[in-house]
Length: 110
Image 1 (cartoon, rainbow, N blue to C red):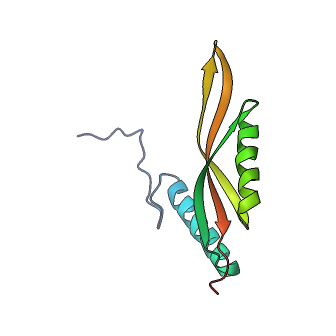
Image 2 (image 1 turned 90 degrees about the horizontal axis):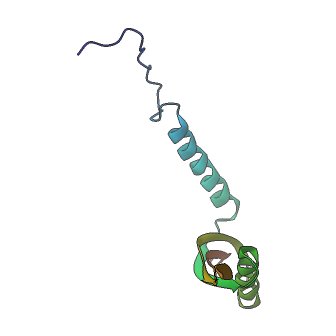
Image 3 (image 1 turned 120 degrees about the vertical axis):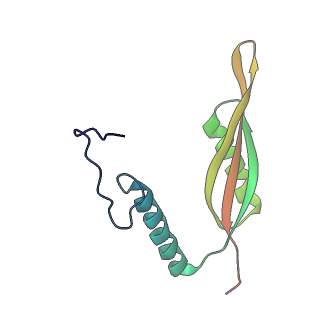
């Protein structure tokens, strides 16, 4: 197979697997961030799944779930929206439902 003379082959760069190094940059950045967090306090987190609901908005559904969790759990740290859904009545959104993963720091263990 004849190579087109207008196409130059990229020179491989040491330690980079992505075309522009983005893959390795993301991996290195994540590793550095994980080491910094681990070195800071070596937290252990528990992750639970919650479902918040609201007739008003997605944001209210999230706030409802986090607010309720805050009444019974300590050390809430973060949440991640896993799924957003809702109910339709007469062609309009009638109800929002948001599934969240919520992380909180475990106590003790040191």
